[in-house]
Structures are given as structure tokens and as C-alpha cells.
Image 1 (tube, rainbow, N blue to C red):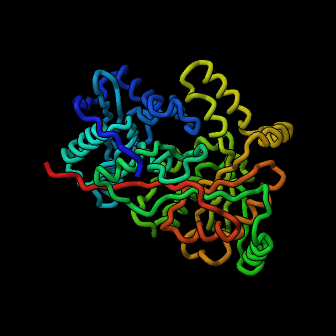
Image 2 (tube, one colour):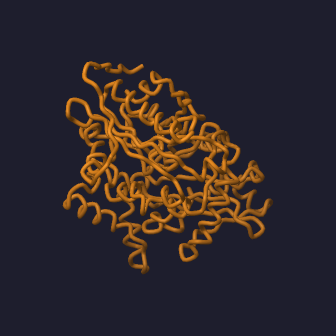
Image 3 (cartoon, rainbow, N blue to C red):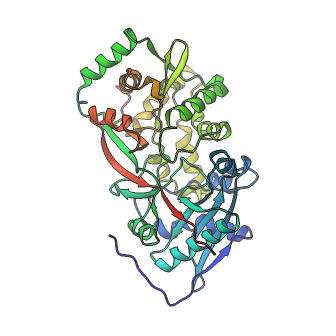
Length: 406
């Protein structure tokens, strides 16, 4: 277990964020924790502001409520946390979860304890019975605590936390809320084991079981959102702790990818005219964002926008050629979802998606594929990836804790 500092003595004061100055301090506090960590990918401040804005943030637009807090000790900010209730999810799933997120703190157990106790009090006042997180008002972006794999930066939509965060959660009485979420690496610069076997399974799925592949159609974006929504809720419903998706959340998740995703690498599996699988790959933009300092300054913003513009959606054949050339700057292509409903498990749909993706990635200059995050509770994706050379390289954990009675 990593050593935890119990500094005590000076009292920790936890205060709600009340004004713009507090809000800016809340937003910028992570640089206190990670500023000298070369593996940390800073959050994009304009994006984070939008997430936390009650008038713009998707969490609030679907009825969620949240409160932000700062921890202060000896006159300086030493931690942050958000307490939240996803009202629609609690009603739909008959749960009483108090979500916590943006949970950052110096290596001081008293600070972490004071922040958690504040969230417990907030949740208890609303009749909630269990803490659940960390989630940053988003069930897909940088959630959980890093358990293993602190030897390289995280990929897009994955988080990074100091070693003492895990020990702190355990000391404060948190338990794993579900199986760990894992990131899997598949090397493209080395021979893929059983490549011929994968091609054979894919051919059988096409020829004997009637599966086919289509590209994403960004001009029919709402239709594609509907397909992904249905696949998410069918494919993941068996997982412990699964929270059903709603369309606004799916649209908000997919919308940013329209500007830089190559539709030829966003694959859908089809059978008898119905969409039965989803397998999207996008460049790992964290390789750029790690150098942009969260767009905290005008220089960083300009630099980041220039870098990001290299992957704007191509409109001409010439731009497609330039874009393919520039994509060689990225070592990793990341795949955030492998969605196949249970009735199609073992029938070759997943193998067909894997095979087709590898075929399309050949010659594009990527060194490796990231599959993240999938759950250890989902036996199919890790098993299929391992069969063809995949190895777990990061592990994240989401926690729960009963709220004490006051």
C-alpha cells in the first residue's frame, strides 16, 4: 500500500464554490496535484467549464443537480470535490446514488476525509444512501481511480491519478462498486497472433451467418445516435452496476468525434438490415493534448487549435490525402466501444468487426490499438482481444460507500 500522509494539526475547512473566483480556483486546482507529472494530460478548460455550467452541461440539462466544494487548509486550497445527484438515473433505476467527482487533493488524509464527509452530508440531506464514483458528471470521461499502469500517459477519455488516491479510498472505507475497468493494448507494429484464424472467423460470419460491415454516416447523425443508444443499452445491460443510457447523453458523447473521426474507421455490423454491432476507432488526441496545457493561456489555446485542426473533417479528396498523411503523427488509435448484443455473441459479429478494423488500419501508420475502457465483468471483449495479442496495460476502479446516518 502506498504511504498516506496523516498531517492533522491544522483544521481543514470545506467551503462551497460561490462565485466566479472560486470557480476558477476549482477549475485550476488539478495543476497543483499534477503540474510536475509528465504522464498527466491536462483537462481542456473550456470543455470543463461547459460541463460544469448548469446552463450548458449535459448532466444539468437532463435534470442532474450538483454542488462544488473547495478544501482550504492554512489559507490555501488543498482539494476539490463535486457532489451530484443524477435524478433521472436514480428514478429510473430505483437507486439513491450520490455521485462524487472532480475529487482531487494533496497527499493528506485529513483533506480527503473532510471532502468525502462533506459530500456524505450533502447526499444525506437529499435522502441519498450511497456514494458512487469518482465520476466527473460524466459516466465515460476520465472516471475511476488508476489501480495499475502508471508507466505511460492515458489515452483519450481515460484518467490519471496519483498512487496515494487508491490507498486513500481504501482507508476511508470505500469498496469496489463493480469489476475493474481495463484498457487493452494490441500492437500493430508486430505480427498479430492467430491473424489467419481471425480472418477465417470473419469470413465465416460474412458467408455463413449473414453479417456485413458498414461505415458511419455522419450526414445521418441522429440515426447513428439512435443505433448507438440501442446497442449500448442492449450490449451492456448484463453488467453489474450498469446505468442505462439516455439519448441526450449519447449525442453529447458522440458529437465531438464528428469533427475528427474518419467514418471509415467507425464500423457498424449489420445483419438482415439491422445494426447489431458498433466498433469506432479515432486518433488518440491525448498525444496532442498532453502538450497543450489545457488551453489555459492564449498561446496554449492557439497551439492546441492548430494541432486539432489537422484532424478536421475532410471535405475534398485532397484534404483526405493530407489527413491520411498527417495521421501518421499519431502512434495510437483508440477504440472506446465494442458493442454487440448478447443474442449475437459467439456468432462471429465481434470477430468480423476486429478483422475489418485491422484491415483498414493497415498502412495508416499507427503503432498500436487501445481498447478502453471495458469491464472485467464483461468476459467477451477481453477474451477476444487476448486471443489476438491484446494485453491489459491499465486498470481503473470505481467505488461505493454507504452514506453514514447523521
